[in-house]
Image 1 (spheres, helix red, strand yellow):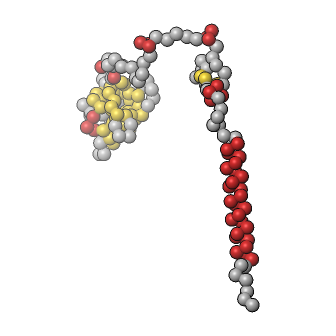
Image 2 (cartoon, rainbow, N blue to C red):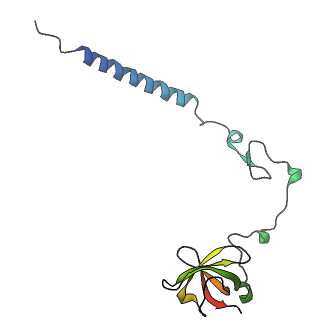
Image 3 (cartoon, one colour):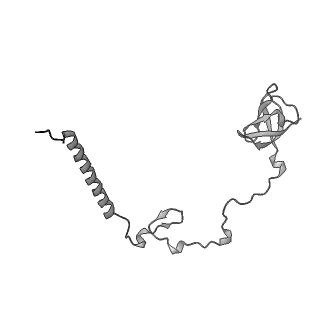
Length: 151
């Protein structure tokens, strides 16, 4: 008589497969029983309180504020052009390399270190000089331009 085609390993794999299938059906039934479908509208509503937090209780009508539609601004409000005199800053040259053509200026008010290149100079400068300058956004941060030496 021939040997049975079902080995112990095949039987174990079949048992695991059946158990996995039963577990999957059980989870499916649990999901159906605890489903959110069929809830009433009141159970699904959420309210926003005066601080902007979500809550399940409706807001107090006594705390209601009337806001005019004209007062609501969407986006960034227009800013007026800055005064050209406000753009001019003063600082002291902390480092300048003549051979490489660049250096740094420390702003007197903000103590911020700002890059300066020889192309942004109106007067020749050296370390320790007090200067006035304007800034513009560069690739790696602020750059000093139109740098003038103060006497």
